[in-house]
Each structure stands twice: as C-alpha cells, then as structure tokens.
Image 1 (cartoon, rainbow, N blue to C red):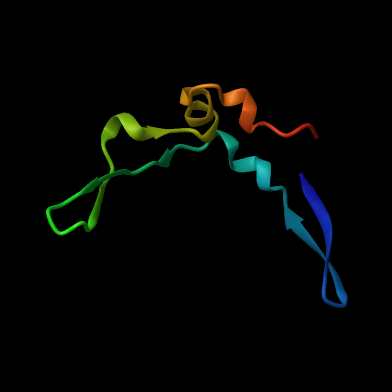
Image 2 (cartoon, rainbow, N blue to C red):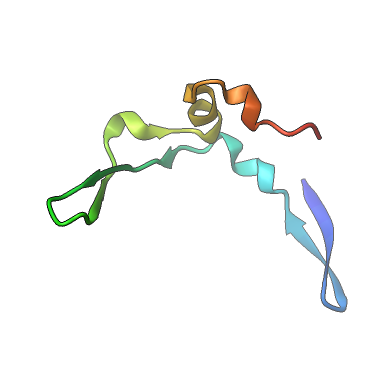
Length: 67
C-alpha cells in the first residue's frame, strides 16, 4: 500500500499511485467556438474510472507498457 521513495536526503512513505484506479474521474469534451477558443464541458457519459476510459479507446492495448 505504501512505497518508500527517496526524496532529496530523506526516506519517506508515499502512497501507491495505482490506488485511485477505481475512482470516478471527469473527462472533458472540447469544442471550438468561432474564434478558435476550445471550450471544455464535462458530460455525464464521460464520468468514468480510468480503467473504463482506457477500455473505451480504440486499440487500447497499444497504450499499455509491460511492467
């Protein structure tokens, strides 16, 4: 659950970054207005976990790195 990671001259405990893998996140949908400015909105269908977002991408296996 915790990793030891060196930070400058100290050894401190840091939370594992993969713990938030199942928490829902808001993903934005960007649209451009007439001036070219990108407006972001967050529709309800884009609220998903990072795993669901990864699975929703076409050919998602190309984004995975062997551990």
